[in-house]
Image 1: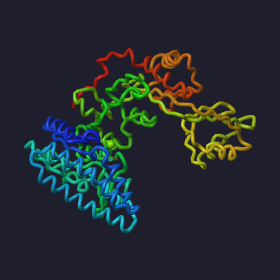
Image 2: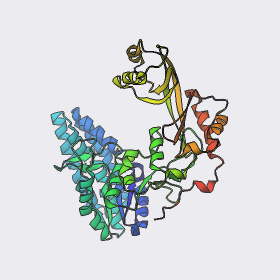
Image 3: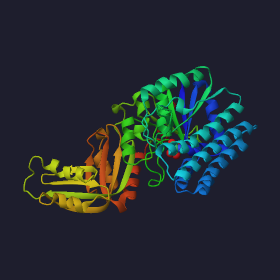
Image 4: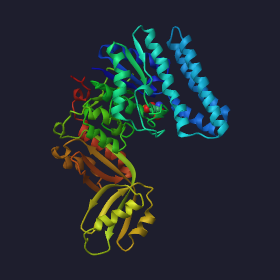
Length: 463
Ligand code: ASP
Ligand code: MG
């Protein structure tokens, strides 16, 4: 068994932060950790900007951007390493390569997705170079494995799709053996390689996906996502002052929350781990003994029957379409939504009545075109500046008195639409955008304030 530990950009931003990461990794040594790192701080942004500057022919600005990236890496080395000479030399060589790439881009005034990947992948490569050196200085055996030697992808540069079966085979050859020998593996997130060996990237924020893919490939006992929050919270802290960390979420609950824009791991990114039955934990690098959330594939639907978390999204626009024929004929809904499909309008909540259909859409939906397309079929009434507030939890419909409690808590806010999700884990309300903060705070007080504090701390996964 092994453990995948992934650290995000802020967790590895400086020498001091990397030192804490090294502490955590070394402390987990007997669990055979494979460490997946993001680029330090905002390096990836700077590398993208360098590429753009080079494309416009501005080599000076491009090299300036690259300079800041390497300057913070060098500063981290100076802070972290007793003997930084060989690491500094490695970084200097990378910087020279990157300079060559960028001058090529500037010369051609052309930045292909493939070249951009080669440029931006330097962020993660720098981070693992510095971190592997720091671990080595601690006297632990370290294997610095290039992600391009295990993560095989297609050739969609900038948004590559992993070939999971072949990735597992490659990881078995390159990552598993050093782990079995007792070494700590250090590798890059976000970065992969195509069959032809070209550097690819998984898309922005892709390191979590890398970690889940490596977890699946290694059949790891756990994938840890170390970041700057104590797990997934019961509500957005910008909306509700004191949200609680949620101890356990099912993958379906996490997906539901993510769909509402909650700060949760994107469900697609952890899918490989979920499918392999591996728990994914979300933890705070600066508070390693604090609360955390386990997204547990074994958390069954039967386990909750209560509200797990609240989420909100807005503004949205509410459309009420009323049939101009007296009775809804068969195929009416299909015709209605065909018009939405043709115009690329995404429909979110839907509530239907005999001759009218109410739904929510994004505020920038092309409503004039929609009205034209539906002319003769339906009239449209539009309400802007609305928001959706949702309670999420597996088996939510079984929560005793759920609707009555929610309605009483919301009072005097009266939702314009109340809607149970087609699944049994979502109860949504449409309110005015101006009421959304109050609605969230009242619902949170109702469903979370009375929970015993002891129930909020994450429990270590017993396996
Ligand atoms: N460094 C990459 C990014 O900033 C990948 C990641 O951090 O997950 O998008
Ligand atoms: Mg990230």
